[in-house]
Image 1 (tube, helix red, strand yellow):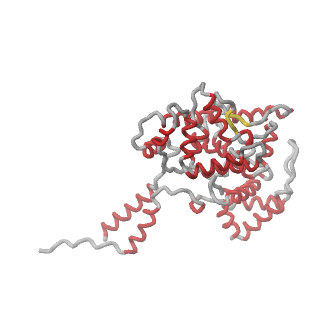
Image 2: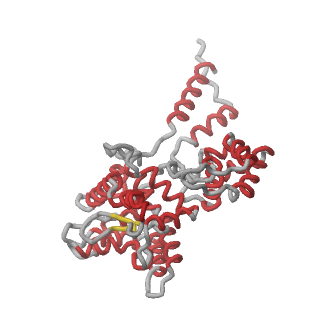
Image 3: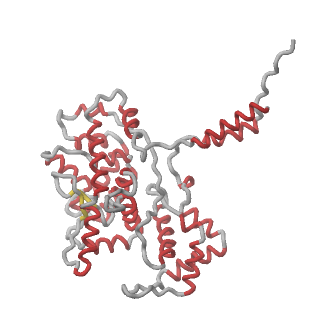
Length: 396
């Protein structure tokens, strides 16, 4: 009696074809090579094209400084060759490039972005589009809440989040670095700001957010003071309160600060009179925290509420009073920002009022209920892999 032939094994070549989709089905952390269109990569492509390369270098070295600053009633004076170079760049991969907050060579990437961005607007910076790629990553919260038993019963939540940072080597090291740079009567503000940026860029996001956005009881001034002092305001903020428009001019002169401000205006700006927010709360908070350590570092106004503001004034703004007040209100009376801060503080408060059997898994589960923070599996790649495998087994 004839026995049914057993299916032949798939040849190695077919298995190699199936391997890449399977390897890509995870949720890797973003790297420069995985960006949709990093400005550094886009410049390399442009430099490989003689026409694009010539336009980029001509615009970089000749056109940026030749565009005159017009009065409000005049059009910008732009040389014809600069218009032609700008048009060439508009048709290149550089026009849609972006950067990432934690990438290596971030300063180089942002310099490229703003060089091309001025080609788009011919001399004026448009801050309605963020230079940062809108990527959301998800990492597990590796926090052992049981270690907080060493604290006194009833310790405020800001103290608890500070302890969680201390128990983590990287968070503790980065926090001590900016603490040392920002302390003492002779602290140097630019070094303090640099170390603050390093903390909020390199520390795990949930630990940094826990320190900055820890909830306090309404009458707990000690907790509120601890929260307000997180960014070392005595050194990080200007000693003499500047005009808000002057503060913004200082920010716009620096590519990093300009980028963080554009990111904040992109993700925290109400879109209409109904106060509809442009993006998810997680993106607004990330943009807000990105401003800490720049010229426009915001902070909590007092120890008794969660209102935030820039350290500046609109006195002496003259004819620009309304513009100055709009800038000030984009922080102090921003419903999207305030709702995002309140929601995150509520989330943080819930962490310490439940019986966690597995703190790491439970926090991940709650975090992933927010669509903005949920990891996105590569369903398409996995589906394609299964389909190919099914067809091969059927016809092999």
